Length: 234
Image 1: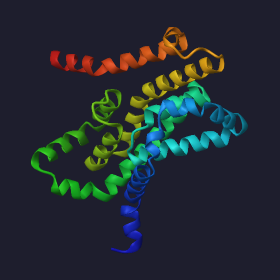
Image 2: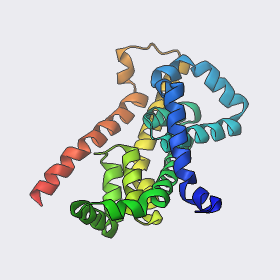
Image 3: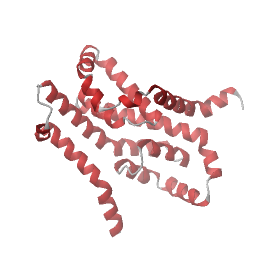
Image 4: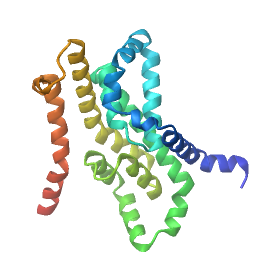
């Protein structure tokens, strides 16, 4: 195998594994939390106000890297996007980063392991892959709307099943947008309350800026139960 072919086949998977190792070794994944956002909110909002475009590009880069590295943190980053850039811009930025990161992981797994996985998979796994390939968009959309498996695992499974890239992109854009905008709305509401000097106590839950996104999250959390009931009736 030539060097150029090796780079084309294994370059993306090397990027994924490199980011994963770097995130674990540095411990940066531990800082992807709302507590860290609150602790550094003054510095972050000042940077956004001084350099709005650069800040948005950095946010997109960090979010995409987190998705590619397959580490916890997308939820906190979606909330941070709303906190820093508002519900609309923050939601679109989070959705764009989720989609771009998913594409990278998908292509990395497909180019590096897709053929090998198909050859080595057992009969049951092959039947699952065939069903996945035939109904790729429906499968992926369901997994995005009803996250019964981690976000990164869906990207990996789609890459190994060698579904079409368009199915992954479409399902990710449609299925991930609700949670991205709900969390961005939550972050935006928290930001406005913090800026107004509101007390950080149980009364926050009574504010419309907080209770509406939380209601959306509750409905999203109930989606798996509704799905199972619907399937049972079918």
